[in-house]
Image (cartoon, rainbow, N blue to C red; front, side, top):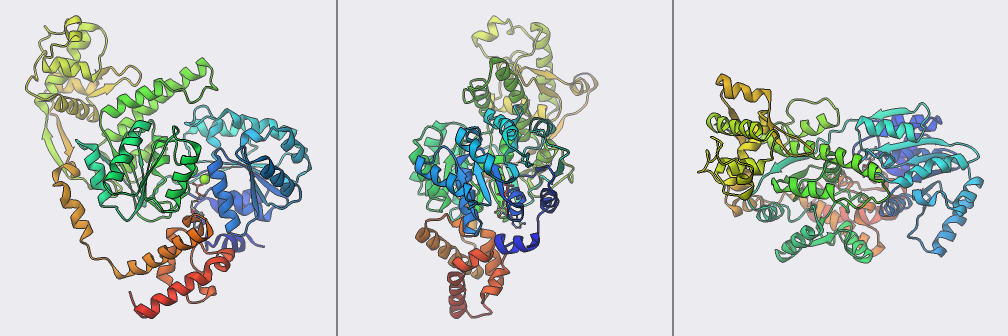
Length: 619
Ligand code: ADP
Ligand code: MG
């Protein structure tokens, strides 16, 4: 069979996405490959499709069991023989999986890295014809990555035990050059065909908000999205508990997920979310790596994450089906303190030596600083993210909170002169730079013990901004940093002036900054939500709603997640095409042979019913 036929028949797609064809061709030609594509870019297809055309077995290393189970279920549902081996399986299940593998029942076998070197599996591997070893989430092999897993290093030992080295295919969404070169070096990829595709996700709209009251802001945002599915991320378990309670008591079908819950509850809650029994998942970053749910239409962060990589990966769980989706970050300066605390008190990874841990921490603090920059920038948010991943882009995307925001030009020359000279004087007096909290105290003329102990009371700038609230001074400090007049040391947090500040202090340069209007604060709480809710429901939504309801029913009857039956993008395409026969149904994006056979009749019947009640020419 030709690869295009496999694409159509098994996966139901009519064309490849960017990068897929090059990678698939290389894999089929027996080459090693490295695929760097954003989350949702379609990395799995690059090894799943060749697996069907190559002789023997394709082995896939994947870090998370939930991820694995999901993928295997999706493949089986598409009529592709796939299995998995991981530590959450019973002895009986494992025995069965080994037997099936030995008899060649699978074309694709997923395995957790820590199982590779078990005696049983090593012995079995000797007998198998392994054509391809695919390493998913390959950044886990690098200690510079955000998710270092020492068990990934076992892949090398495993390869050495094989009678013949299969082709290696590594995939990741982490694009920093250091991680990329680590993957090639540590996995010893041989002259790999490397494809780095665009990191842009045009259907995602990015926004950073600074609400006075995050809880209220969150409720407003969700009110506008009641009929949609989404994820709300919090930095801590306690945050998850509180927000989940808040949402439930406001009538949202919310569930929760964090590492402190029992495995049973986590499994149950995750399933409720995936099967759309609950619409909002409130979670820590422990949630999501294995979640390929395609109809997540918003991801809201209640706290700033620790790095741009982490943010882009978490936010990227929205809009996988290509439909418009929102990625909103609710920022407050306190988030920086929380994130620093989490970095300095990290205990998750006790596989590291002290030295490794220190190196990782220093790296983490620099990443945090870059993440903070995202929250503070007044430039294009998409541009900021793409810059981070080293990808060229247009100066403005016109689809982010900053490009669309209204700005007020504020003349801050006087305030800037006061603040900048205070920074200089404190530094001269102490011989080192101090953080924003202490600077604020000096400017406000605080009687705090620390100010007195350091002898800062008799500085001429002491109490210069006595009349301003602490929050306003903090805001001004941030504006001056965003404007390039101040810089913060990522490790110690000390604030210092930049050369540009000298222009203001000594050469009379004016300071005018554009200050974003905060959408959630300018309008009365109810106004926004109402305006949306009253929009007349379009007739075409009826058909989509009917198809979704059918999908939910099938999912409940057959105990498979709704998105594995088909994605929202598929339902949208189906509603637009309105197929009447199985042949026409196969034209719908995402419907392959197996799905058409299994669910085709049900969908066709629903479509027919719609036409009978609405007429063929109904909108
Ligand atoms: P990731 O790169 O994050 O691993 P996935 O492999 O999970 O991404 O793919 C994300 C989504 O894109 C899935 O729903 C998948 O079915 C869909 N997809 C992959 N390739 C194509 C294609 N060629 N045409 C249409 N949809 C595709
Ligand atoms: Mg993936």
